[in-house]
Each structure stands twice: as structure tokens, then as C-alpha cells.
Amino acid sequence: MVRNQENYDQAVQLRERGFTLQEIARVCDVSKSTVSKWLKNNAISANITKQNKRRAGQENAKRLKLMQKARGVERATRYSESLKNAETEFKHYKTSTLFMAGLMLYSAHGDRQNASKVRFSSTDAQAHKIFIKFAKEYLGVDVGDIRLWLQLYQDQTESVCMKRWKKFTGLPYQQFYRTQFVQTNTKNALHYGVGNTIISRTVLQRKLLKWVDLAQKELAK
Image 1 (cartoon, helix red, strand yellow):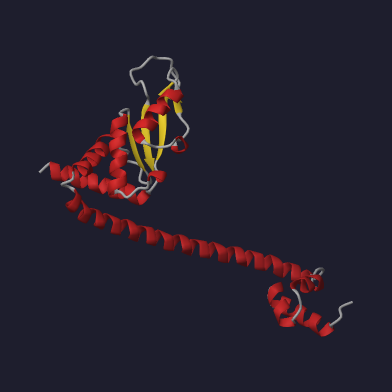
Image 2 (tube, helix red, strand yellow):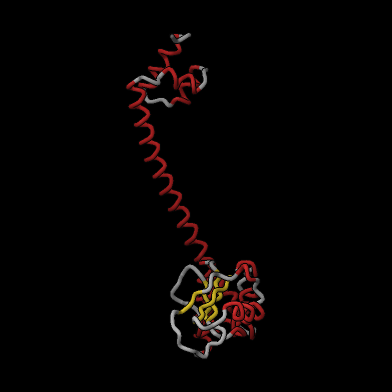
């Protein structure tokens, strides 16, 4: 038995018009749980619940689409500004030996196909040391954001190789990705494997590729 029939009748009418339980509770000045009990066995209310859930899902999908569009525009703007800044920065940095060395190293050993991350691959630990120094100095990368993973042959000792790469790069072991082993028993001359320095920043990869392009044009004059 409902204590306040008038409130109950009003709740049913509001529900039939598509009001949510929370909205009805506010109008009737009762708790949401009370409204839920009133309408528990109401067939129309059950149907309204389904409609509201479907409508909420559609609205959420629309909001998500709009958010993704806004983020896409924001990213495009950020990338465009970054490339413009890269041209100005190049003019100031191009006289630096470290700057040009870093660009030439990446031109020769960097991944220029992946648009989302900087990846420098080489067997030369010294080259990685120079590239990391370049990344910190000119890309503004914090050393904690740099990762390294090794590619080794089966006959190589992982701990020995990791120790050498740690010594040259200065990166702690917790910033090493899991080592990948090439499945072969062939002896090889790559005593310490192939190192891959990784920086997962799309905007920095685009800036770096722009600098490499400008450097190549500058040196080809």
C-alpha cells in the first residue's frame, strides 16, 4: 500500500512521459529507491527504462564521437604548430655538432615509417649514447621516458649484454623492455646484440622527421 497515493499517481504519470527515476524522485520529494519500489512491477516503467538506456547509449555514442573529433582537431593543430616550430628551431640548432650528429644518426638508423614513436636501432652502443644525449638536449625528453629493448641471438648471454648497454646508455634496467631472441644457433659478430632506443611520443617523431628532412636538404646544397 502506497502511503501517498497522490505522489504515486504523479510518479506513474511522469514515468509514462519518459522521466527518469532520479527526476521523478526530485519532483515527488522522495528517494530514488522509493520511486523504484513504486514502479517495480509497472510494465510501462520497464519499457521506459529500456528506452532511456537505449537513448543514453545513443547519446553517449554521439558525445564520444564529438570528443574524438575534438581531440583529432586538437592533435592536428598541435602537430601543425610543432612542425612550424621545428623549422624555426632548425635554423638556431643547425650549427650545433650534437644536433646535426643526432639527425644524421637517425637518418641512417632511425625508424622513419612509424608515425607514433621515435625508434633508433643500432649495434653501436656509443651511437645510442649520442642519440640519447641529443634527445634530451634538443627534443626535451626526460630520461625516464626513454626505453630500450635488445635483440639477441640464442648463444648470447642476456645479463652480459644488458650490463654493457646499461653502461653506455645510462638507462636503468627497469627501463629495458623484454629482450627478444632470434631463433638461430649461428654464431655471429654482434657480440652485444642490436639495441633499440624507444621514445613513444608522436609529436616528437614528427618533429624529428622534419628536422632530418631539413638537414638533408641543407647538406645537399
